[in-house]
Length: 277
Image (spheres, rainbow, N blue to C red):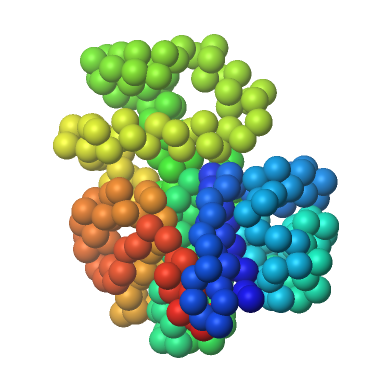
């Protein structure tokens, strides 16, 4: 039995395989060991996986997660999983490696994540050989849902968008400057709060102001995260909800920069299942 987890900041997708065949598939809320303690993660897993996957069922666990790129964070996640399952063989890897394995297989390419957060890497067909650090929603995450939402909120409050569009946005979510600042600076998971405005951008994507906002954010992503690898001839593959939602705008932006977009998929799980078979 092999348990595979694809974990983002918003949700976690779990698949249990028995001799390569899917036994069960479960969705739980997202986890991030850079923002949550091992005890917090353990309690969440206990609540959400109780009765769905027995403690001793998986012989191997492959956990791919947002924030699982540093030893200290990985150890917190391993400790939490070790408390829930009796499994000794627990492998903690980054969500970026999940993207690279799922998208590139054994081929060279650039693998990217565009979801609540963003990341990218240069993959040689076996391992990640170069990575521009994500730096999170405050210092980085260009092109992500959090970045798009931050740009939208900032442009509205600083009157960079038309009054009609700003009013439409603020009314839709019942927001004002006080509630926004409270949610961003005092409430937990502000990245999720900012990313929650992605549907508004989807609904208004034909608006010229929104289209310009999207192009600006995706240009920032490519210029600051993928072009730095100086491998412009390689296909750029993308995983994540933002990538799927704005595939048209991403491809247009990439083309304007002389870049080539390969596959855009919502989740790496299908690729990971094939990889671990």
